[in-house]
View 1 (tube, rainbow, N blue to C red):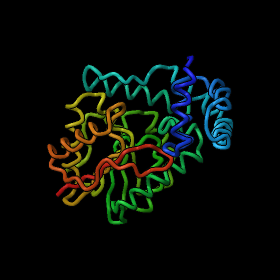
View 2 (tube, rainbow, N blue to C red; view 1 turned 90 degrees about the vertical axis):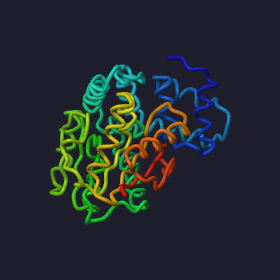
View 3 (cartoon, rainbow, N blue to C red; view 1 turned 60 degrees about the vertical axis):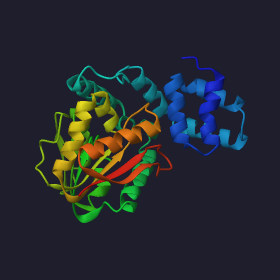
View 4 (cartoon, rainbow, N blue to C red; view 1 turned 45 degrees about the horizontal axis):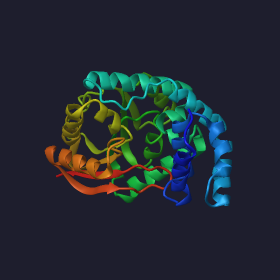
Length: 293
């Protein structure tokens, strides 16, 4: 896919201005061009700090194999930004996407910006855990639930920080990977669900519900599915329990996403504690912290 050099420059400028990490910029470049070699050839001719451009080129070279895998994943054309006809179609699309993705790269299937690197994914995961800790939602007396756990990459480090953690996913492939990765943890389990609700869990059974890059796929399933999940989160939370949401929707203006989350929180009777924050260095995720009164 031929991309104008001006577009490549615009994307790279985010890295040069220190507004985006090398990983996020390379992910966007690969998504736009579907050609890591074209990106490698374009970088030396761009305007800006030569040392930083060379650093970005080295980062690309170090993760070339992972970038090639990402291109193959993209070319399957399973990740549609279009709103589904209904919740069932949206959930089925997500199931097919993640089953296919995890079969090619476990790391990239849960974070494309990891570029297929276990080390980069671990660093990004540490950042998420650090923010959860900073936000005061962890504790060894707390029971946690992750909506859309993927390969269980967040659950493993949380096992030492909470009493128990349960992960849900609609993808059998993701559940299989998470089951394998969490085999040594007695306080973690994963559940294959329909994706329609949280009916597998009792009312007031959790102290923490969190979701990392999952709600964008619920949003594609339609507003009824999203509203139902907010109500379900409130139902399963104990009084004083927390709901952490990292990334609500893709392609939505930031202020509009914040308005929607606030309206959903109000509709589900959840208090807004933190909103519209960008607490990460590697990832560009946007976070909200809601609480059941």
